[in-house]
Image 1 (cartoon, helix red, strand yellow):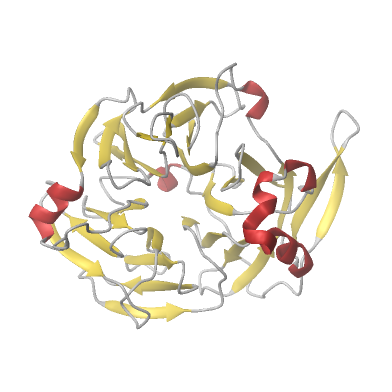
Image 2: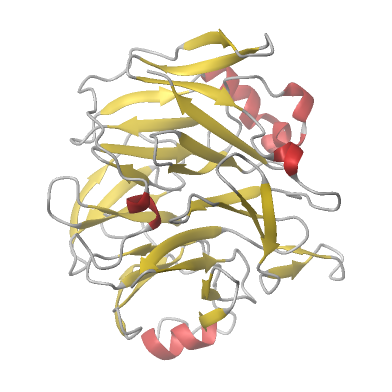
Length: 365
């Protein structure tokens, strides 16, 4: 076990994954105490009840997700952190029951289209416990901002923007180099990776003492290269730690060893946005209207919410449905952007939709 448990390791439980892929989408229904019916997705032991808009009613007046809810992470006390493009701050914090706790991260904000109206620029968020204290690693989707490590009070430990990372890596030589951070992930030795997924297509490896080690990737579609390495995570399900990357625009996952060498590539995804692992299960939120579960051998167990006709509606007219809330249907996703297991094996999904949406998939199988 690493001395630096991650936010997903907080919720790690034994899960036995089924070895066969789902034959198709499955939507069931069950009644809650009020008599209303919630959609279910999945099959067998991987069946989940959908609680859409989890926590939405608890947001205080003047608090909103704006143009999108983006990332999600859970701390060692079970508090849930959701990054967003709204107001105030760029992170909303809830307790496990969905009660609003606070807003934070005012420094990750950006100007709107008219260059005057600021909004949150929250994107990737990951949590690691280091010597008994939780820290947030934040990746804002904005060139003018910076990767940040902060404590749970929101106090900065360090920040790394374009200039600092160029000084370390030498990778940003153009006059206006692309730089738009998307996510971070952690190594078992205390090091970490910072992913410039919307910018340079590089991942930057730092050691546990915050010293630059190497750069992985760069732009391309051959093995070891990326087109939008949007999210990444530590995959040690077979006992050997590896870095797995959601190479989104290349529609695939890629695995690397701890020295940064490419190991394998797996196709079969649409636009994989991020990764979480619990026990033998891997969850991959796919921006094209589904959430995929894979077993220890990376065989597909289920594409949760998958429906080709629905997907065509979601993708039509330049993703117009993301701003048409009345058209959204129970048990179906619009644009899953991040997903995270909780301690009970439930899955939280955040979506890239206007007004934001957080869905809690309650495990019932």
